[in-house]
Length: 125
Image 1 (cartoon, rainbow, N blue to C red):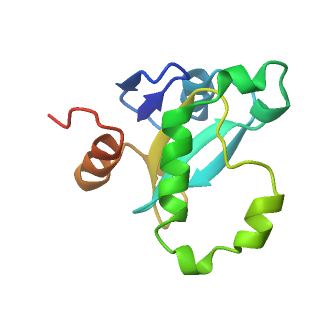
Image 2 (cartoon, one colour):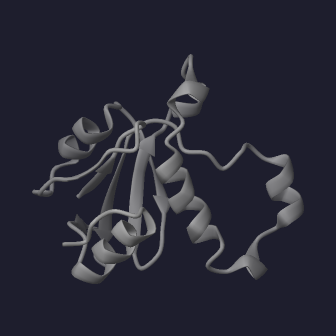
């Protein structure tokens, strides 16, 4: 599991399959799922934008990943609706995992991990 905090620090944790690990990683009691590229998903604080001081807790690296995914298929974006909706920002710490057809999540496969880390300008090792 890749975790990105609001200060831009990127860490990796071994994901054992428990939902409590996600809650712990993002420091929230309710989450939303934002789809990224290659079957990866980002778990975000469901109430992040509604919390006091939200604009001081914008996660710019996570926001970049969300926008990067949008641009995968720009022809599918309703640009007029995008202009009138909430800004596509991510607030709070996030966790990124791989999704599977059977509905479970796991640590990222090597290709997805490498893509995410390269997009963030982090070391792939």
